[in-house]
Length: 393
Image (cartoon, rainbow, N blue to C red; front, side, top):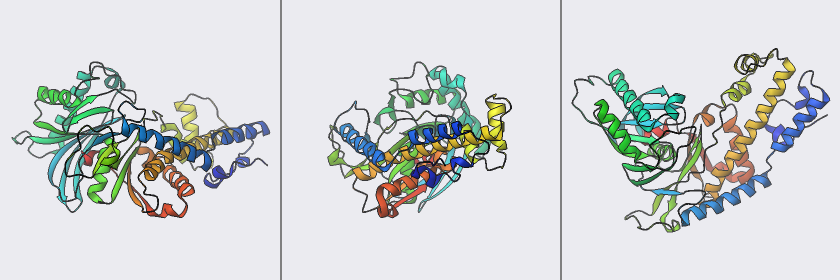
């Protein structure tokens, strides 16, 4: 009988040999894929060691592979007021109104607007005009007496792309990622471009803060749980942010006053991996894998699939999904180790559709961390920071 590698078989529920009607050649091929994709604890540890070294380089100098962008600001949970927030991600634009009532309590209204391929690849002006139009529609639909109210709204802008931030409301776009290629916008201030678009549309809003989505997640979860020291996004892209001792940030020209720590936006890169079909297939628990059949035959135009075909596809999706979760554990583990939090414990806020919605991703991530940290993993508190990037702005 063909067996999957131990780490794989401990998480994936059905053994390979249970695929109905599969030939020995097919089973052997799947076993080969599983072995190629397997990530042992030893391999994960190698990746973590390498990433910790890259983090140190990023703290010493600018222009390194891992950017390690520093910024200030720590919420207390006592902040109050009503504000607008924009969250521009890889797939959707979220427009939100948040009311902070203190004691970590937040009330919200929000709406998502789909970003089209044309908006991702057109001009920067077209993209920001689209954003301004969405804000106008949101205010008209969700904010009472918007047209009669002379109020000027303060707005936070969560921008999920690499920027060089020079002030709380200024940031130069370094480069587009996640499939965006908007012209005439790189090396320009994204806050200025957004404010110009709002002014053209006549939207009564002032962009008061620019926040990276991962930093927003950290700030949001810190508002609810002041012990939170790490924020992570697992979605269309992935990134992390954490609180770092200022003494370790060697590349700072000026040391901020009255603060022993700064937030580091790690910028550890984007997967740029579409998981829509894989998610549907992994979640398919029907005996005949009907949802998988629909994906293969209707969405991918593969005619007349058999149950064996669908079981093989599902198994491969499980293998790939498991590898992705285990790889994702390495960057989080590296930050925990870098900050010396393994034995003292830490709270981590995680946002993103991959973590929240992809079948078994969160369990697989935690299993890998438990293998790496042993009983010390019990001191790591991982929580979903739903809407974290928007609240953080």
